[in-house]
Image (cartoon, rainbow, N blue to C red; front, side, top):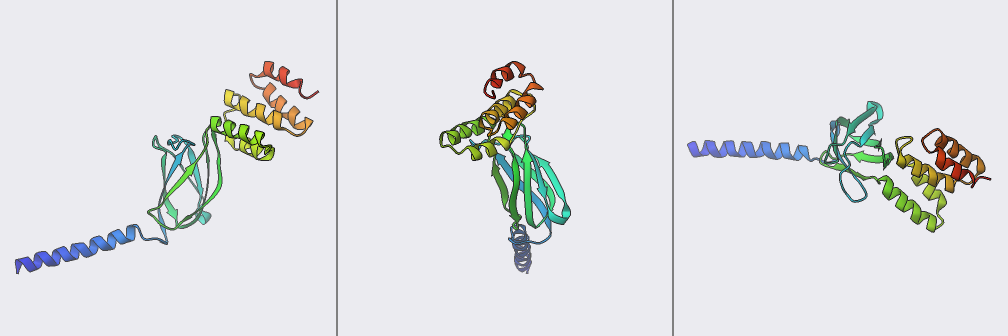
Amino acid sequence: MECRKIICRFCLLFFFFCLISSCATKPKFSGNADLCGLVVDENNRPVKGFVIHAFCGFSGMKSAVTNENGIFVIENVPSGKIIFSGEKKNYSKLSDVNYQFINRGDIFCCQVKSVKAVIDLVDELILRDEIQTACKLLDSVSCEKKSAEWGLVQSYKFFLADSKNKKTEILSSLKESAFCEYVKNLEVFIK
């Protein structure tokens, strides 16, 4: 009789375990759950301090910041379509990335590029005469204004600009920063 009770308890526990575990990983869930994600750089190294924004339809915008392992968690996110954006200084921005949050067990992963990687890619695009793509890539970089990285990005934009007005606009922005001496050298290219 005692053995029978043990077997019944075991079966009951096993049933609950199976029920709980199947709910935790059930695809196409409805309702809310925590959404986990990972942000890495061009070398698949975690990016710490990347600010992630998730537009969750009627629930509005929810945000999180990656930890030292590049991981973020946004709590209480409704199932369905999520639109991600985000940025960190000296990295390419994440903008309007669509994601279907239908499985609680999935992890959203994205790769961003450091300023150095963007500049390397822009150099390749210039050699292939893909100027528009290079300009778009430069526009995707988030830099602290007046930093060395910002000055470098602005310099590339200057040389890729297709009009005198655009070049003058970039020079004006550089003049407001600590790059005054450099601007004098660039002004030669406008005349």
